Image 1 (cartoon, one colour):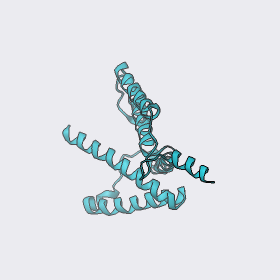
Image 2: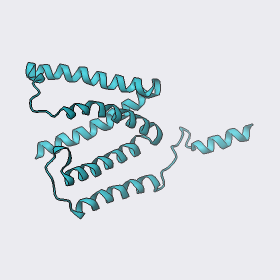
Image 3: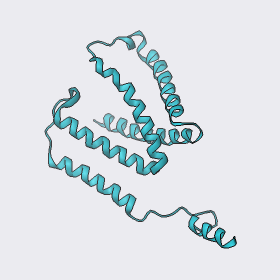
Image 4: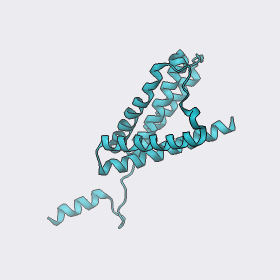
Length: 167
């Protein structure tokens, strides 16, 4: 179990880090270029690592449902949506919403036993947990986020006011 916890923490850190990198790439290219670059490099890296770790066995795909192949196309939607959400909302707010949505939908799919998952009984404690996280996001976003300070200690608004006064 400890290994699973550590791997989940690493995955969370990597998703946040990748999202920031993707947003920075998107500042210099378009969304589709960013997605192509990200998924193309991911394909190359996973192909090389898979061949190193598993060799020819990597291509043995037994008992796999054909619709599982769609997961790669889902990745396109993930990257496009994350890049745009980060551009519009900022990294912390976008990732907090994404993680909450992941948790909520995982709860739904587990509870209904969809997509080949073992059905897990739904409990109101699980729902309350998700709602507490949603409440935390609302507190984070609505709870008095401060404007970044410039190097001289004045806010961006004060600089704009000063610039208008000079005109």
